[in-house]
Image 1: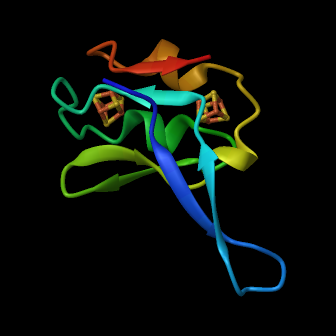
Image 2: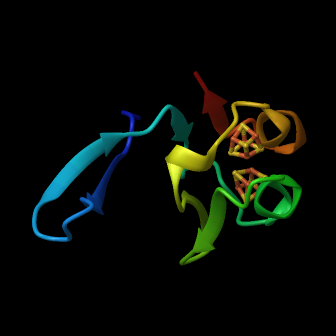
Amino acid sequence: MGLGSFFKRNKENKAEEVIESHIDINTDDCGGCEKCSIACPNNVLIIVDGVSSVRDPQVCKSCKVCMAICPNDCITVN
Ligand code: SF4
Ligand code: SF4
């Protein structure tokens, strides 16, 4: 699985830029248990369509709590 890309409006809200995420989620193995989204102290992760997704990689502090709590080893934080 590659790293995800995220589209964000720039400050002028006119153009979009691509922000690479340092959080990789193996959605094939994710069971949607929500443990990561509940545990993340910065509310980075959200469950969408039954799998964990990165809501905003820019607020991630790389604490790796999500990696530690995932029962399926789905998450890699670089
Ligand atoms: S590394 Fe920490 S801050 Fe980043 S998504 Fe995981 S739990 Fe949240
Ligand atoms: S803790 Fe793991 S299995 Fe559970 S929702 Fe998060 S990524 Fe998926």
